[in-house]
Image (cartoon, rainbow, N blue to C red):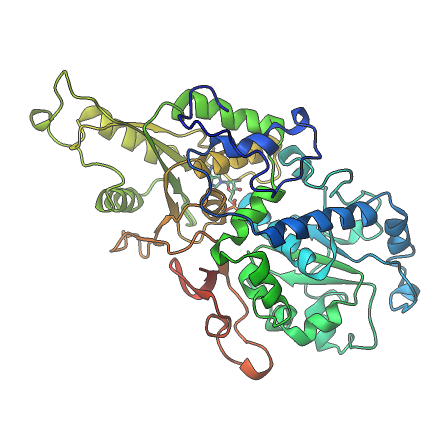
Length: 483
Ligand code: GDP
C-alpha cells in the first residue's frame, strides 16, 4: 500500500474478488494489482461469480482468436476485397468487435467498456485501434495475448473515412436494403454517436442483433456509454442480470477489470496522492467542466460550486476571524479538496477563500489542482496522461461533485463507486437553483439513447421501455442510466 496512507489492517484484496486474473507479472503494470489499495474503503460492489467465470472464459477466447493466431489470420484473409465481402464461406471460428478511438478520453473509456461488454455478451473478441495513444495510457488487460489491433489489419486505412454515408455503415445498409438475414457482409461499421440517426440506433433492437450477430467484423465509432440500452434485448437481459446483480455497478466492475493505467500514469497518480491527499482526514473531489464557446472562468459557475458544496455540507462556510472557534487545543480536521478543471481560476479562488478566513467548522481546507491546461489537447500523450491520472485521483476521494453531462466526471465517480453530486448545466449565464443534485446511482449516463424503441414498443421513449433504467438527473429526456 501507499506508505502511511491507510489505517486499515486488512490486507488489500489484490484480485478484487476474483475480478482480476493472477496471470500477469506485477512490475510491468503496477496499477493492476495496487490500484485497489489506494481506496480507503473496499468497494461496496462485489463482482458476481458469474461475471468472474465469464471473464476467465473471455480471456481464453481472446487468446485463441487474438492477433497472431491462426484464427485471426483466417478471419482477416481477403477482408476488404469487394468480391469477398459477401462470401458466405467459412471465415473461421472467431468474431470481432473493433473499437476506434474518437472524441475525448472520458468518451473513449466509456465506449471501450461498452464495446467490451457487448463483446462479452456476443462472444466476440474486442480489439482496439492503436493509431491513437491508447498504449501510453493503459496496460494490456488480457493475459498472454494483446488487445491492440495489428497495424496491418486490412481495414485500418478506412477507419478515418467511416461515416454515415459509407456503404458499410449499418444504418445506411438498412436504408439501402443491403443487409438481410441471408446476405451477411464480412464487416460493417456501427455509428453509435450522440447525433446518430435512428437507423443506426436500430443496432439495439433484437431483430437487428440477429443479423448483426452473423457478421464476423464489427467496427465501432461511438462516443456514448451505451450499456443501458443493451438491456433492451430480451436475449441480453437475463444474461446481464446474472452478470450484474447490482445493476448500477456495471461500469465500476468493467473499468476495474479493463483499465490499468501504465506505470508512467500510475506514477503521476501515486506521487500526487502522497504529496497532497494521503494525510487528509477526508477528501472531496470537484470536477469542473465548462461547456461554452468561450469556456474559462465564469462567476456564475463559481457561485454554483460554492452554493452546491455549502448547501450539501461538503465544504464549510468561511467566517470572520473573530468568529473562529479554534483555540490552541482544538484538534482540527484536515480536508483536502482536489479540483480538476482545464481552468485554474476556480481552485485559486477556493484556495484564497480558505486562506484568508477561517472555516465555520474549524476544519482546515487545503485545495489542490494538478493541472489547468486551458485547452483540450486530445491525442497529445502527456495531456491525455494527465487527464487520465486526474480521473483516477478523483475516483479516490470520499465525496465527489461533477459537472453535468461530462464523461470525464462519469468515469471518475463510477470508477470510485461514488454517487456524485451533479452540478446542473447552467443556462443563460446564471447559476441554476438548486445548483446540484445527488445522483441515485454510480453508473454513468447513456447520453442520447435511442428514442424509437423496438418492435411492439416502437415510438416509445427508451426510458420507459427498459426496466432498471431511469432518466439521468443531469440530462432529462435525453439520457438514461442503470440504477
Ligand atoms: P467530456 O468532454 O467532459 O465529456 O470529457 P472527455 O474526457 O471526453 O473530453 C474532455 C477532454 O478535455 C479530456 O479528455 C481532457 O483532454 C480535457 N479535460 C477536460 N477537463 C479536464 C480536467 O479537469 N483535467 C484535465 N487534465 N483535462 C481535462
